Length: 349
Image 1: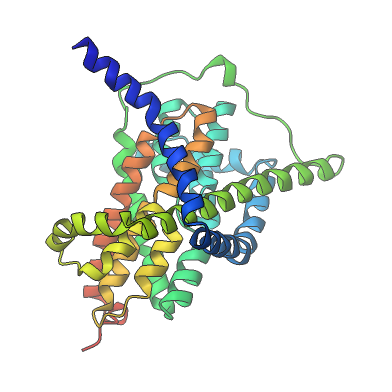
Image 2: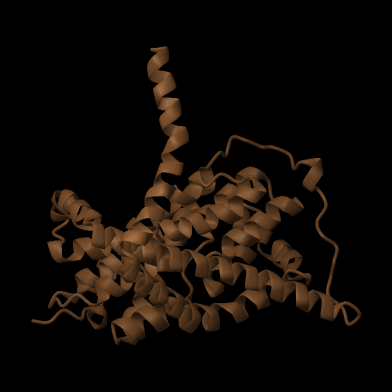
């Protein structure tokens, strides 16, 4: 028994180094395809992510130096506490997470935890539902850009928000029995406020923080674009696609969607693009799958969130459970609305 434990322990310690070595090897073996994928990922980040998200990230950082958070806390505590079991200040990461998109909600929640605005349990509840795709991406990129239809973008955004609110309500019972007091280490809320005397310093700090976040996103997009390329060229993606076909068939999902779904589980943007490009008269299947992927977010975004929350010592577990539930609820709500309102149904006869 002790030998088995030793083997398992060694496997856990060697698994990640082995994967990194294998990744480095595949970078060399598929260098041409990887270079092309990295360029596409970098272009996607530079042309879409930076111009659409950077201004919002800067604005969010600036709002943190005002009394907006305290005002929201006082005004919305009577709603946030009974519905989501979090303080009223939790409305700020929820609203900014919706407006700005990933991973702004997690960044604000981590800051709240560090400044003592919420307890660890409240931070975990907030983490489960305050990280969402923004309207610019869902309506602009996915709806108008990929599906060529504004109504589709609006539908996906509505179901995305309904799903995250549902998850937030479910997670109000997450560790509800615990009433831990705030740690003395984090009991003081930052008192640094913006004024004419420190406007330049505050603006510079906000820009630098926003740039760090946007570069973090860019790095993950490029990295996962290359990983997806390696999976495709090595045959791993086809192998996973074939092995998961029986599961997809249960939900009447054609095999042509398998690669797109797996790609979206790895990296959201590439997956949604692949799903939207599949020709199918029953376009509602494409839309419902995209709703799931937008709600789930993908492994790439999960790792972005982990890189932020680990510094504040917030568990990633509620985020992962919450995003899986959000993807499922978003798909269900999208199916219901498509079959309820005729103007959302784009299926060809």
